[in-house]
Length: 265
DNA sequence: CGAGATGTTCGGCT
DNA sequence: AAGCCGAACATCTC
Image (cartoon, rainbow, N blue to C red; front, side):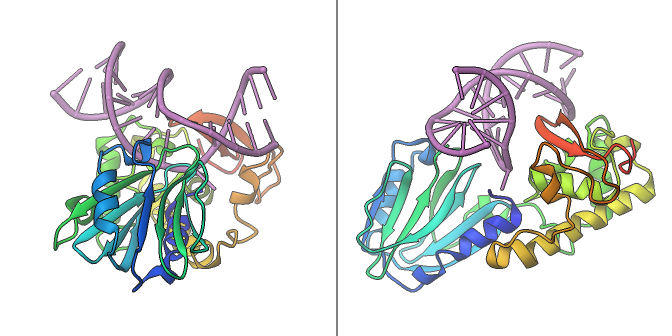
């Protein structure tokens, strides 16, 4: 389930392992999860290391350990972090287990689109420090967004929202939520937006991120009940504003739902 | 049983 | 040549 706020929620699940030592590591190093081939290094280095802290940015998490070990976790489509008892026996999809005295930290991912990467060094890795500006940061300006739209004029706005360089952390449901709030049809091209529509999109993007982080990221609660979110899953979903049945199409390679009446095409 | 699922990457085409 | 699009990845659920 991992988009911005869900990733932040999952990251915090391992917080009880902070300042505690990893006694033993069990990793399915041959799986796609470890496609960078760093599984062996990770297993060897993490044994005896202490988990020092973690952060989440966009859809990526970074776990910092002693012995100069950094571990990046991307949850893909079906990844999750869990806490299990110290004597946990990993199942088929539990690709990484860090055994501690008090509990086990587990990474599970049935579809294996997730990814675990490793960095050894005193400083954090470049794949972390070079992430684009977060949507809720000061650098994420409207001008930057409009410049992106100029460069990608023939791209559908829905596809643009899924671009992780411009909209880091936004996934399929967040993109549909943002477009619904900004009253823009998903197939509109980036070059077609009026300044007013760009401004609305910019603002709603930040608003959806902000509220999602205040609700979903805190206790995995669903977003507020009047959100589009709740309608877009069901085949018979209707627009929360006017009750019209939602449209469905594939845009930007993903299932997209919108209201024909209130989202301007 | 087939279709689709909250993601990314690659290769081909324009 | 940049940039867009569809396919592929692997498994589960409806």
